[in-house]
Amino acid sequence: MICLIALFVFGVLAIFSASYRPLAKEAFDCVFRKITFRKCKTNLDQRIKGDLVGRSMRRSPWFARFLHKRFEILSWIFTILLILSLVQSGISIYYWAAYGNCNGPNESGFCIFNSVAVTEQGCDSPNCTGENCGVEPCGNVSCGCDPGDDCIGDSSLAKD
Image (cartoon, rainbow, N blue to C red; front, side, top):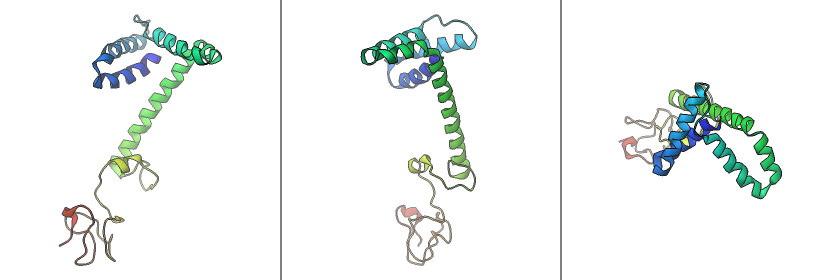
């Protein structure tokens, strides 16, 4: 099922480069045929297998033999890993949108999306100065700071 991985990879590459579009189209045809339990006419899987085995043969004949004999099993393993990682990424994106973290409600573990996205400052914001920071959530109204103190960073969050 290497065609599914090829469809994903070449589909993304085809967005940025026209030279990958024929390969993406070929991978789509191959995946569609595999889903309908027909043999792939384009031999894309055989070409990818031959290219990978040929490249690995230069470095390690033992690994090339292993790859050639178990290519279908390895391609299924990588296909399952691709699907599982896409599902987990989707769940994490949902949790981040719904709860503000990647791990679900009432969790505080690491979330990669927090470093990428700009979020509204909350009660535990390090961007407020003063004694009472974090008493009220930061927003357009106030940042919970003492009179005269203001939020660091975004001027729209400053307290007048």
